[in-house]
Image (tube, rainbow over all chains, first blue to last red; front, side, top):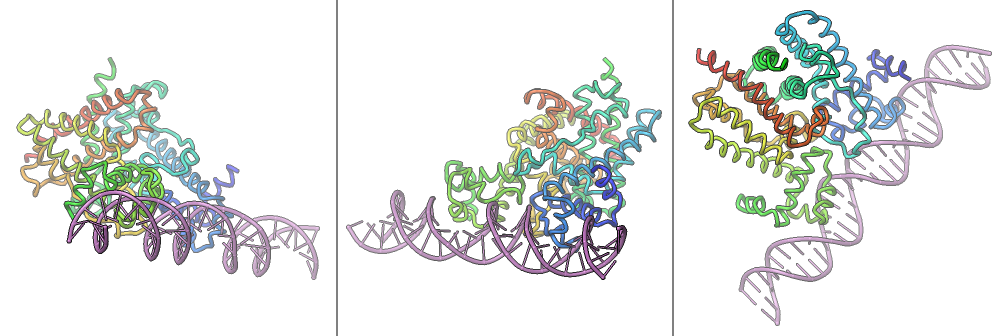
Length: 213
Length: 213
DNA sequence: TGCCTGTTCCATCAAATGATGGGTAAATTA
DNA sequence: TAATTTACCCATCATTTGATGGAACAGGCA
């Protein structure tokens, strides 16, 4: 089962993979209730029953999409961690911001879907609230803000959340925020990185002092 | 027309006001497509046709809710501005954070709905994308980060957005983030305020130097 | 060739959803 | 009091939506 899903995930030319890719986009744009199975099928140019044949019911497809995105995000975080490993703290931070921001602007449906899950609810209640991995502790450790991921102080957790959510916000809200600063995409992305660095580096640098008490 | 709406908005005992209040909650929790007119009617304990009688079609009610919330938010911002007027910059900032955070934790549907509008889309496209007021420039000016609201530098706009969105994130994501730090509501709110202050005060203080160039 | 398996579409269903017309009773006005 | 307006509910409609059964079709394999 894991192998089949893995294969479909990797192969964007297979029908299953194509459906998943389109579902990512649409669920990201319109949310769970805002996306209909017919919208997805139409976009893939297949019949609805074909969609059900591959992925089962709507909630299952949605779950697959969310887990798919979490997996991508987890891999990206590991990739970033390998690169920044051993660097001074400020470099670790700014490079992490730079890389994650670039990645998410390339895959905005990730930010969209994560924000949807964070701040929205589904009518089905807990039916769709399957467990999704939680990264804050890992991020905190890889930033050197905690010795091990078991023991991360609360204020550090919130700081990491603030940073990660800020990235998601700027990525996901580009269509609203970019007109506010009247920039093209490239410059907007650049300014977002600068702003995030500008805001969070001093905070974390300052935090490194009193976090040791 | 404006007077009627105004009256309904103020009077939470009138049928129109009760519907609006419930619609705020539900649209905030489930978003536009996730909320059905029947859910709202059931919660108010009235018939669906009564709802249509008072507010017209679903999109109209949603628009009324969003405008209602923006109005509340605008009033709150003005109230805050009056209090912090003339204070030193750091006090202005920390008091603003404190007051807005308290207010939004008391009215989480505001944060919910704003995030929904920022990061989600509606199938009806531009039909529901009516104009909503934009506060970043006003906030920037009242913080003393810009001389007038006509001329706010782009990086300041993004900093203000980052701060405001961060508050919304922590309010709206309480059900997910609070368990991460394992706190009761009161302590969580306190920690959120500390964290936001801790992150943004140094940034803005630093910004005051090079923003003058 | 004939059979099986996997993949796709067509036709269709039941439930949910947004919306409306008409009736009714209370409140308001003349 | 009679007429009119306001506020509300019941019954119902048309459309959308999630979902399924069964037929068609292609490719591998005996």
